[in-house]
Image (cartoon, rainbow, N blue to C red; front, side, top):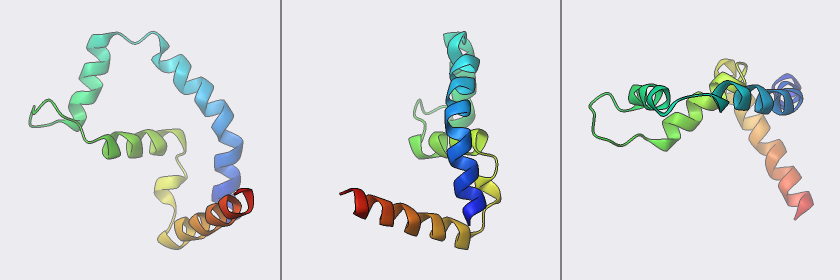
Length: 86
């Protein structure tokens, strides 16, 4: 499971700046067009969980490929770190 965790830690800083640069010059029209993908029935509402999941998948391409066991391992690591820090 270390591969997923290491990949995410090393990519976080670089991805944050890349994502910000990509969206920096985005127009409102383009942003609304992208958000329409999350509202196919034109209700005016988008499920934030779906948006966040897609953003995470785009920022960290290894995450959608992770098995359930890999994700569970990372959750245990995170819980241990949070426990230690609290």
